[in-house]
Image 1 (tube, rainbow, N blue to C red):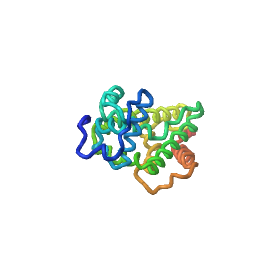
Image 2: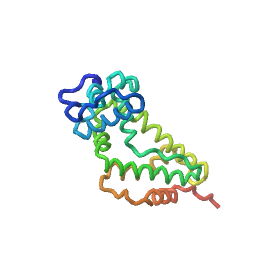
Image 3: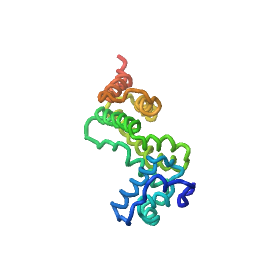
Image 4: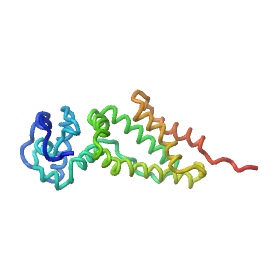
Length: 213
């Protein structure tokens, strides 16, 4: 995948180049905004180039390369920045933390539906193996690990069965909200109580079995 030679017609027609060379945080913000503007104007992820982004942001290519080694790393940061932030740990029970995690996924699904740029990015990412792999390593994998840590806490606290594989338990807990937020576009994600309902229903079904008399 080329990152420093713009595709024909890509980049420049979709946004007016900004004058000057903003620095540090201002430059970073200009670069992020340029990518969002280019995508909003119809430029696809594969058409985006470092040169086109630099022109739209009013910075030199070297300014981008000082921050990101390639286009894929930049786009992962752009998409991550558009997403709903991960919830901070409250120090509460495993159940409370699981509710917060599921609710984060619910809100993330809503954001993907309402923000065209984010939806377009996710829709195109699977056709770009390098970008998809980078996104998985930097975003998906750490979040899955955080979710499995919560599942392990729930086992340790005695609210989940300990006789099932950890990954299976994670899939059973996270699968329903992933189905609703990713695969089922018309599902109801507006209910703020959805996460609590899901977690409580799942914990009831996956609670430790009582000891035999």
